[in-house]
Length: 106
Length: 120
Image 1 (tube, one colour):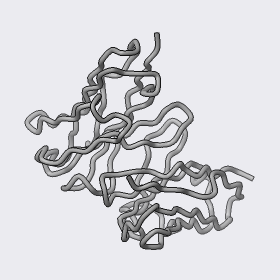
Image 2 (cartoon, each protein chain N blue to C red):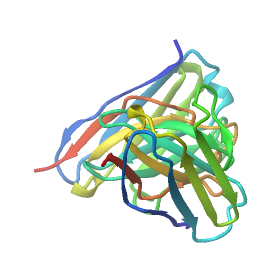
Image 3 (spheres, rainbow over the protein chains, first blue to last red):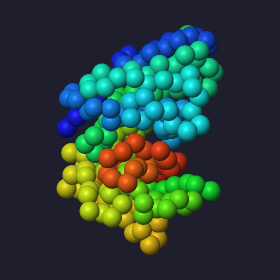
């Protein structure tokens, strides 16, 4: 099974900050990686697929990069709606998720 | 409206069974793989099972293999999860999610979920 590890687990930031979340895969997954946002009490929402492709309707302040085993999600100029938990997911062999990164207000 | 609606959750005693359903609308259901993802209270997301558009390819997480069975009925735009031998570790919110054509692919639509509580 492919294990996904995110860091940090929690991130404190302010509106307007640039934040970066890292995701590492236990083996190469090429670019078969997605990022999701989950707000409390809500279903996850797809933000990024194929490591760097922005899902339709998602603001351009969200960017993804990486390939192989190391990936990042960057949010430029954090907005109030962005305080949420973010998950990476590999989908090269069925699916598995990282443990999540909670972005909280500093 | 494009949506997924889950049902069938509830309270069940350990060792018993439960069947979840998910109905899709607003898209061509049989063009896509479908998945079940769960989230225990206060925890992260765990992929449970996935099924290709034609049911030819099916996968399960190790934690549910041999106990859970995924199936679909494309004529009814429906996805199912038969859960047997339930234990406390299966207590979670269960989401159905729409994948890609194959069983691998990102999940671009999610239902609102149905809660399963396993307790005596």
